[in-house]
Image (cartoon, rainbow, N blue to C red; front, side, top):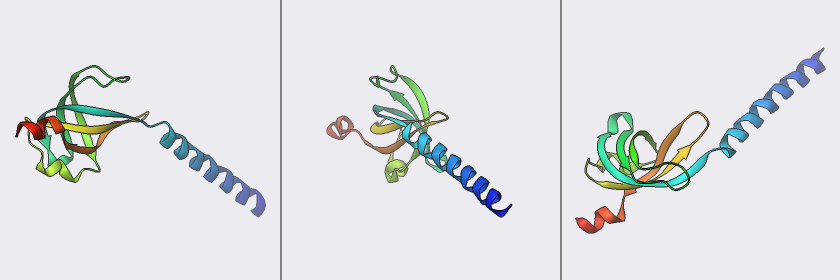
Length: 107
């Protein structure tokens, strides 16, 4: 009985582990640029008028959650940003958000 329970536990653990690996492998990443229209640093969110994202999306206004971006607290509406948009089965979010080079040249 103990062996069956151990085997069942290992089987469930293996399935969970395989599922998390599959989710990580199915995340797609795209380079994104656009104009910030709103920054909500308290909730790690931005509204941005994105430029065309080749292979993923046409230009349009979007709201994203932001992760892995210390620069978020310094960004302001009206600035252009560059970022990586991460697309998973259940979510999409921005990471590595920085001031876009085009915006740096105009300041």
